[in-house]
Image (cartoon, rainbow, N blue to C red; front, side):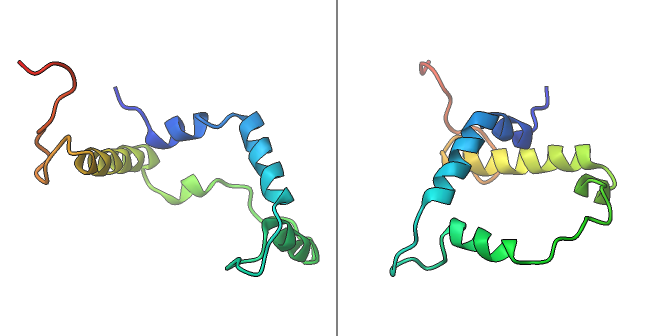
Length: 103
Protein backbone atom coordinates (compact mmCIF):
# COMPACT_ATOMS: atom_id res chain seq x y z
CA UNK A 1 0.00 0.00 0.00
CA UNK A 2 1.36 3.38 -1.03
CA UNK A 3 1.86 5.94 1.75
CA UNK A 4 2.61 9.46 0.62
CA UNK A 5 5.64 10.72 2.55
CA UNK A 6 4.36 14.30 2.32
CA UNK A 7 0.98 13.49 3.84
CA UNK A 8 2.61 11.41 6.57
CA UNK A 9 4.94 14.25 7.52
CA UNK A 10 2.30 16.95 7.45
CA UNK A 11 -0.05 14.96 9.68
CA UNK A 12 2.67 14.82 12.34
CA UNK A 13 2.12 18.51 13.00
CA UNK A 14 -1.29 19.27 14.33
CA UNK A 15 -2.74 22.77 14.03
CA UNK A 16 -1.96 23.29 17.70
CA UNK A 17 1.72 22.46 17.17
CA UNK A 18 1.89 24.72 14.13
CA UNK A 19 0.29 27.59 16.05
CA UNK A 20 2.73 27.05 18.93
CA UNK A 21 5.68 27.11 16.53
CA UNK A 22 4.39 30.32 14.90
CA UNK A 23 4.09 32.03 18.28
CA UNK A 24 7.56 30.87 19.29
CA UNK A 25 9.05 32.19 16.04
CA UNK A 26 7.31 35.53 16.39
CA UNK A 27 8.64 35.98 19.94
CA UNK A 28 12.27 35.31 18.99
CA UNK A 29 14.57 38.31 18.98
CA UNK A 30 17.55 38.74 16.73
CA UNK A 31 21.03 39.53 17.99
CA UNK A 32 24.28 40.83 16.54
CA UNK A 33 25.37 37.29 15.69
CA UNK A 34 22.22 36.45 13.70
CA UNK A 35 22.85 35.90 10.01
CA UNK A 36 19.26 36.97 9.15
CA UNK A 37 16.63 39.22 10.74
CA UNK A 38 14.25 37.56 13.21
CA UNK A 39 10.89 36.40 11.84
CA UNK A 40 9.08 39.16 13.73
CA UNK A 41 11.30 41.78 12.10
CA UNK A 42 10.66 40.26 8.68
CA UNK A 43 6.90 40.22 9.27
CA UNK A 44 6.93 43.92 10.22
CA UNK A 45 8.76 44.78 6.99
CA UNK A 46 6.43 42.64 4.85
CA UNK A 47 3.37 44.26 6.47
CA UNK A 48 4.40 47.55 4.84
CA UNK A 49 4.01 46.10 1.33
CA UNK A 50 0.82 47.06 -0.50
CA UNK A 51 -1.91 44.45 -0.18
CA UNK A 52 -3.09 42.72 -3.32
CA UNK A 53 -5.32 39.79 -4.05
CA UNK A 54 -4.12 36.59 -5.61
CA UNK A 55 -5.12 36.39 -9.26
CA UNK A 56 -5.71 32.64 -9.35
CA UNK A 57 -6.87 30.36 -6.61
CA UNK A 58 -5.73 27.14 -8.29
CA UNK A 59 -3.46 24.74 -6.50
CA UNK A 60 0.19 24.42 -7.51
CA UNK A 61 -0.59 20.71 -7.85
CA UNK A 62 -2.40 21.56 -11.09
CA UNK A 63 0.97 22.36 -12.69
CA UNK A 64 1.81 18.65 -12.86
CA UNK A 65 0.32 16.20 -15.34
CA UNK A 66 0.06 13.29 -12.91
CA UNK A 67 0.68 14.47 -9.35
CA UNK A 68 -0.12 11.07 -7.81
CA UNK A 69 2.53 9.35 -9.92
CA UNK A 70 5.04 12.09 -9.08
CA UNK A 71 4.30 11.69 -5.35
CA UNK A 72 4.87 7.93 -5.65
CA UNK A 73 8.20 8.48 -7.43
CA UNK A 74 9.36 11.12 -4.95
CA UNK A 75 8.31 9.01 -1.96
CA UNK A 76 10.22 6.01 -3.34
CA UNK A 77 13.28 8.19 -3.99
CA UNK A 78 13.23 9.82 -0.53
CA UNK A 79 12.57 6.52 1.21
CA UNK A 80 15.46 4.96 -0.73
CA UNK A 81 17.82 7.76 0.32
CA UNK A 82 16.78 7.37 3.96
CA UNK A 83 17.18 3.58 3.86
CA UNK A 84 20.59 3.93 2.18
CA UNK A 85 21.82 6.44 4.79
CA UNK A 86 20.57 4.17 7.58
CA UNK A 87 22.47 1.24 6.08
CA UNK A 88 19.34 -0.78 5.37
CA UNK A 89 19.95 -0.99 1.60
CA UNK A 90 23.03 -0.70 -0.58
CA UNK A 91 23.53 1.53 -3.64
CA UNK A 92 21.75 -1.08 -5.80
CA UNK A 93 18.69 -0.99 -3.55
CA UNK A 94 19.34 -4.43 -2.10
CA UNK A 95 18.51 -5.04 1.56
CA UNK A 96 21.64 -5.45 3.66
CA UNK A 97 20.20 -5.17 7.13
CA UNK A 98 16.92 -6.49 8.51
CA UNK A 99 14.97 -5.63 11.61
CA UNK A 100 14.47 -8.30 14.25
CA UNK A 101 16.44 -11.37 15.24
CA UNK A 102 19.17 -12.75 12.99
CA UNK A 103 18.59 -16.36 11.91
